[in-house]
Image 1: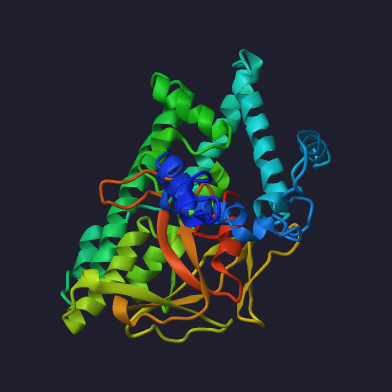
Image 2: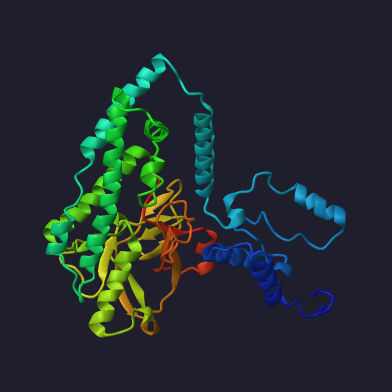
Length: 404
């Protein structure tokens, strides 16, 4: 390109070749590709030829002036040995997140390398396990009465939320039954009434280490929480469904409490599509952030939802838009949203950031048989007076659940 077009540098073609062809072929996730293209825009632009242009806000990173080879070596030597988060467009809090993950990995590696104790130490472990099993057993409620739920909330053409509720109960019942059976078997094994199989030993080791057992994870919604927090969170989700069953749909839905969030969102669209006789695949969502207030009645068309968290940014209720995170505050509560189904051609237009919503802080997932990612939920438009690239490079995202 440089030889063929010495006077006209084809930056757009170079960006496409680098981002979409060279690296893009290896990056399969759409959001990762969006981040890649955003980062390339910092370096692949004509402003680089201006001496005042810098790659970061601090001014430490910039294109050195034209010179001889040794001058470039000297320039590189003067760069900071440890790159600050702002070199990548991240908030300073990213350093804390990085250090936490390194510490967690180090401690997890130490725990894995520990040899299995024997003798008196095992007696102490068995006693602790019995106590953990008893705590989980006492907290875990009975499975839902699906026959009563289907009777009270039958399948209705104009009310898809009845189906959403009953399907959620079916999913959670499978998880409850697995947990109850496994801890009952483990309790018997600890008493010596049944043989301690390999699966039960793995279950006990995970519970003793405060991790979610693989046996439960196979029937569970995605979660990175430690075992005590996971059990408490599960009980809250079950209570939400029980209250819905007893008292009817809530005015504000705790969106983080659903086992399969996509079913809830599809239910909102389906109700709107059937009432207005519109194809569901022509619908999208409008998102309206709400002030701090008490909602006394549910929305007729859409749904009020809460329970989300922001990572990499915070919501400013005074300016009513996205702002930078406070120092040393990694996560903040997102505002309550009104989610309204609308035809794609009639969606509202305003300065915003297309913010991805994930189920866990891990953000990555696999493509499920339903066609949805196991982690990504949807994009939500949040008001902002800054360009999208600012938040994209900062890794700003909404989360349904934290890892604590």
